[in-house]
Length: 218
Image (cartoon, rainbow, N blue to C red):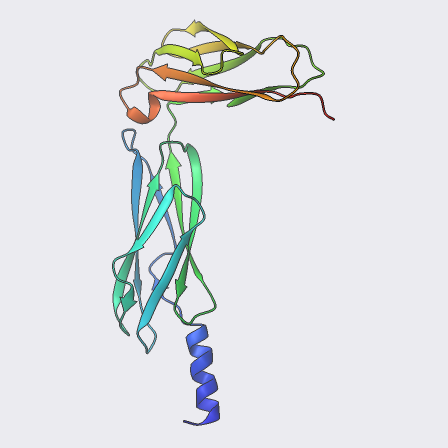
């Protein structure tokens, strides 16, 4: 084998790529879905067999598997991405790297998901600094659905924070008043509000809001 041909083969291997129908796929979640499955068909258009050595997702919420690790020259395959959306909302993009054996250049696939949110929490977290008054703050819970959704209960998982719910519009809008600890503190105090609704969809039954009282900066 000539020196020039050897160099050409090395370069071709290092840049080997799979050809995807689409490297970015868009999908809209249905109200009762807790996970989404998206398929990325591809073809090995190179002259050699290719091996998928690894697939690395940028988010633990997305797992990507190949129907086959080895793809013959001219062969076809599918990458199947499963996205856990139980804690996701609105429009999200999740990406994974695909590595071929002997190739120094990864490829990327992306799932762009539109996840309708029927129960919104605004804001999603509350904070108090050491220097501000320990006054109560308010979280608004809005039901964005054609049929009413009741806010059943709110519980503070840290008793240092107290909370109380108020109905603004039955089945539509609620407010939660949160009061932070009143005693002196030397370390940050964290808390979480567990918010339960009567939504018939599991993804919208339980929501949470994080709360934090920060100590004096040293």
